[in-house]
Length: 169
Image (cartoon, rainbow, N blue to C red):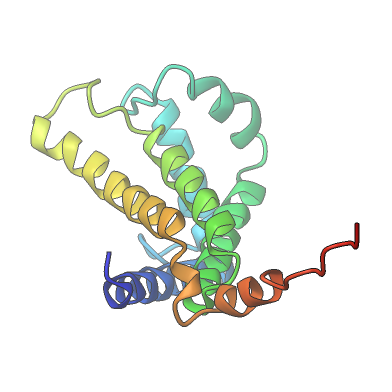
C-alpha cells in the first residue's frame, strides 16, 4: 500500500485515539455528561443486565474482574487509548501498540454480541463494523510497518541495520 495513505490513516487514527484517551483519563464528561469512570461503570452494569448481550465467554471476565474494579478498568481503557494515539502519531513501537489496540477493540466488541437480543440487525451489525474496521486498519498498519514511514520506528530500524563484521576464519 502507498506509504502516504498509511501515513494519513496512522495520523487520523492516532489523533482520534489521543483525543478520546485524553478526555477519558482527564475525568471530563465524554458521552453522557458524566466522567468516563461513571459512564464506564454504567456500561458494564448495562452489559451484564438483561438488556446487555456480551459474548458468552466474556461475561465471566466482566463479572469477576471488571465489575469489581470499574475505575481501574476505565483508566486502563482511557490510558490505553492515550498511549495508542501517541504511538500512532509518533510512529513509535507501532506494531506493538497496534496489537494492543486490536485487543482493545476486541474487548469492547465482546461486550455486545450483534447476534443476540432484540432489535434491528442493521443496528447490531453497525457496532461490529465500527470496531472491526478500526481493528482491521490497525492490523494493516501493523503488518505494513507503517511507523517506518515518517515515524520513530524508521529511526529505530536504521539502528538495527548495523552490519557486524564477520569473524576471520
